[in-house]
Length: 197
Length: 169
Image 1 (cartoon, helix red, strand yellow):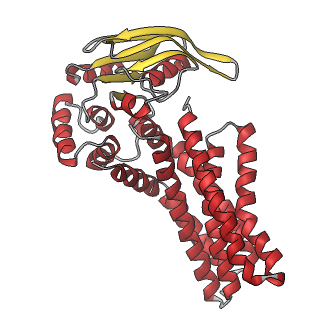
Image 2 (tube, one colour):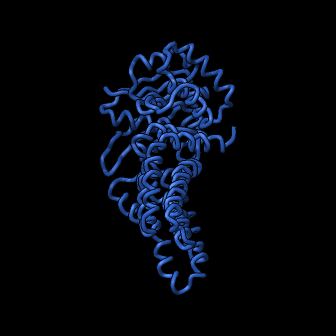
Image 3 (tube, one colour):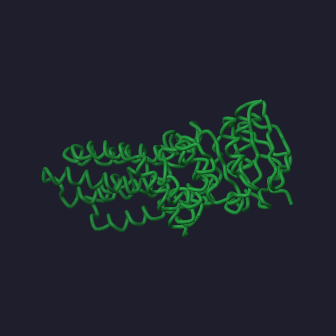
């Protein structure tokens, strides 16, 4: 039995648990995509927060407690739990894109914004997850940091689109990759220190 | 060497002592029942003994491993059953597959062991969590505030495993 079997088992169990929430968000995502492009970032950020919180929230508590009692390293569990909302957010971005495509608003600029917002939302997931495992006082700064990360691509697009459109891709990459790596490491640490009482 | 060795283990959160320092030494095959003054204290004690929660002070050794330094090795020696674990969202073979994947037990072996345990428990339907906890044949079972009927069912099929039962006085 390999480590990946445990990771896959965690992912499958959590995906099944959050199926209804994901379906509801996908149903909302298509009309959101029909609307203006500026709706994409807030919608994805809010959905990411919801999905990440749900992954460790009350309804998933039994699963989560079981996973904490399993012989798994914190970083392995962190990766597995983070993958679930990542898959879900990418599906939502696809639904948003389909919505925008439907009314022929999926210009390269809008497509790029949706794609980057989805990627940044993925980077924000470990931050939201870390916040969800903390008390209300510390959860708020984590949530704020998560939203700030999710909105970064919109800001970068707004700043660079007119002046240096060619710089959008490298700037987004330079910001996104370290944020994602640091966030995931931080969530692994949070999980290793988490006491479910 | 005791299977479970707690030395003045306590748990404090935000300056509030949830579990006062307590010590326990449990040998293989032993069954120890400890009543704690509150449900929260029982929960803390059981989860510290299972390596899920880290004691704020004191020393904890599970099968000779310190769960702070070697959490995987320590947790491998424990089968934890608590009230929240009993409320898993899926059951039957699906649950057994999930548990076996988490504990690294081969699927065929897990399936055969589950059938054996279900037959011994003789409580069809409600035993997935109990079967799951004993699937990897851990040498230590930690039971947190469970119904006496469940405790006796577990004790009946535990074999040589040590049992630590935390309950409310």
